[in-house]
Amino acid sequence: QVQLVESGGGLVQPGGSLRLSCAASKSVLSITPTGINTMGWYRQAPGKQREFVAGITSDGSTAYVDSVKGRFTISADNAKNMVYLQMNSLKSEDTAVYYCTANYYGADYWGQGTQVTVSS
Image 1 (cartoon, helix red, strand yellow):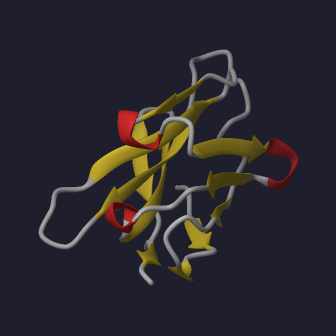
Image 2 (cartoon, rainbow, N blue to C red; image 1 turned 60 degrees about the vertical axis):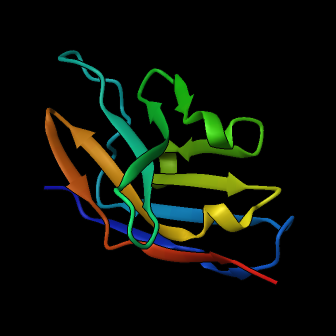
């Protein structure tokens, strides 16, 4: 079992920045002899399906949805079991509930989500 707790959401004006944090209950991104674990961020806007935003693997590879490339950066601090999402140049369409997720030995885990609202 992996518990994930997000923080850092809030209200920000267009063009502003926020950093989301996700605290994991164990070291998900440690490299293991049996495979690669991953952590990431998804988001769900009102009336829309949940979508992938960014991901990071235990070998350090990252991936982003096209709409956030160049604006968002995912990073990890393995010593603290933390994953971050730095969000810059925020747009109104980034408004959503952001969820931290982990795939740990083939099982998926989700946090409760944190609201990000981009509005003037």
